[in-house]
Length: 439
Image (cartoon, rainbow, N blue to C red; front, top):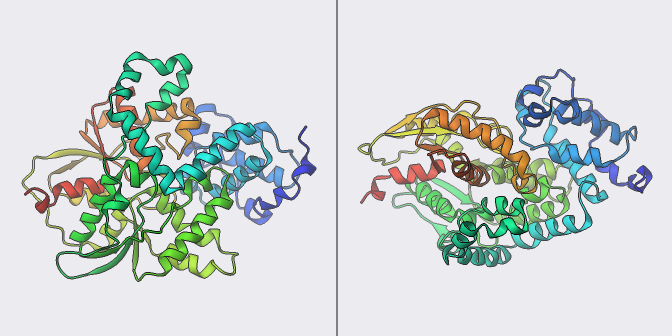
């Protein structure tokens, strides 16, 4: 039986009372919260979860399965932070609470916790491990085996959930970007900007074309791009899922690697990665050795659309292509965590031939939320259905979004809810419009 005293030391990692007291209980977050929208139950709102964390931190409420369920039911989309007039940093609270429940063994079985940690640490965070698994997946997808499994409904025999989750798996790239991108890439003309590039983990194997598109666009912008080969996963998936200790280990490695090179901007094309790397400054603020280094590192991180919007480089784009009807979905960790809202729209609207339609509830979560759509598939579908209805109503032929999780989730939604739209990263559209790309 679980007892509160068993976790006395563990509870010390929860936020201090002065941080928990920031919430003024105004309720403006309620209308923005996807889980509260479903349940209309207070504990499933940001305000309710903060009250629960506060009670546990003060030992007024025991750790319990219900507490763990609410922390894990949260999508961590951070829409509440955008709405909050008091500037409450809710995401940091809930992620710290997840560390507590994960370490205490609530909300999951020992076996499931072990499997999750193995997959995140030994597969996702390991470049060699992820590439090995990706090669197996690529064989499964391209050999005809996947087509056979889906046509026969074989996975349904074992589990309906397994069958649904398999459909979420993105196509593995033919080539991995860490092998295709040179450590130093130079523009054709003179160097105008000194940049570095983080190629990520899933982006490297499952969205490698986007990474290579990013390099091509940066070169067109006049960037010298340094892409260190010994960089590692940013740690976001681990940090958001209760394994902060391992996430910090990865973060230290990246800080040390990028410290060795000369650059002014560290470019990211993945909203989740960019947000977490910008958060290194907070994560290491009490670390005597890494505080200043992390602050310097985080200050240089820029999303690719943020960089283009701010620097306004001259791009040689083809203005003679057929018009394209386009809409844009805000990745939660770009708009709510990084506060990058207007920049992608400015870039997209400036592209020749783009007929832009604003997406209703563009900043509402699509349900991907890291690995949320895998571990809580049915809950994620509620958000996905809402998102796909809004996309369908735009009549757009292309939906742009700047995060791999969102791209995979929305692509899944196009099939599941029969919505005829192409899902694309903004940088890929820019690459398609480059004049040199048309020859």
